[in-house]
Image 1 (cartoon, rainbow, N blue to C red):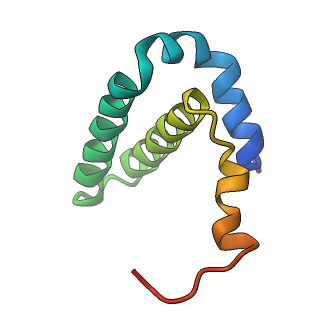
Image 2 (image 1 turned 120 degrees about the vertical axis):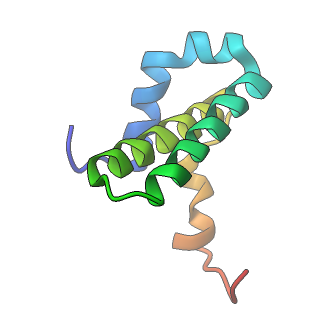
Length: 90
């Protein structure tokens, strides 16, 4: 499954994990997401490139999970950047 689109990856995560993710709910799932972001922060401070890659993948998967259980289509959400355009910087 290489060179996969956001929609395909989100659907893959939904098909594999939705039942347990929905049962856990948004607050519990968000806590898992935050934990993975923390692990990514730690990985970014180090030199282990494989670990960085793994943590980026985990963060993306948990973001898809949060989107799935909150009925957010990430492909449509990123249109903020890809279609509508964003002016300025934060």
